[in-house]
Image (cartoon, rainbow, N blue to C red):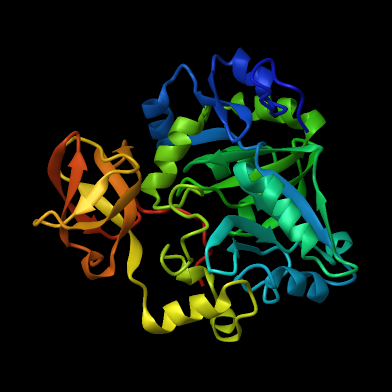
Length: 382
């Protein structure tokens, strides 16, 4: 999927040359040379995505098939590694879940799709984070039973079209995608190119992620960018967009030492999996569900204009340490600083006043409910 990069042994995505042509500022990220911003700048890229449609290159993420003799066997094999309910997935449905370790910590978070197509009836399609994909694939492959195999996809790119006009834009290239619901996927032709399309994304906006053959990636991206509503968006705006939406970034807001319960991801574990367990660290997670946790991921709204960055300490009025910021910065849509982090459970209630050690001063803030903006995922109303 990649070629040797020109420097630092960084990998490149199939869209690398196009990023350079578009004037992107490139930075190392998860072993890849990736665009952090374009001439529009991070702030305007963020606002453009909230107003119209942004196009993201996420080809650095890991894509793979898990194949076996039948769906139940494949789903059961993966359920032994994640707390998500995969056996209940309908054809074409997507599940957000986590790979857990024996301590209940999170090895990675990932998307798992049950394909709708008959020729993929005995498969699952997974997308994992770029920084973890090698370890994830080794871990999954090593734990698959005889007859079930992980097959990494090395000949496809992945792009994301996100924003309130994304569906209207995409309808011009794949009309059938308009009827899709949030967290569903299907194979379809996009501008005549065979793709796997999901109605999903990581910005809080409506939109699509498109797995496209590597050889067609540039052509499809150029066609989408030719639409007046679409602009290329880099990693800088992607980060501020997901932060406003209250979404975790692996290695920052979740890691080997944080459980799904502490990370406020309990919603991603169904009642059946909570009761039955059967995944790594299940006993610990079940105990946390029953007895509570000592800390929890929360949203934080600093007062004033100074942002609280990752690593900022959280304290009470007496200076007692309560926790730490894991993601923080300026929220362009919010119009001020926002953050999330882990805090002592006794102080995790929304409205609790706290203090953040920003630029050598204790600055006031309060715990708030996330997300910081209204999510606009497309869900069909009953």
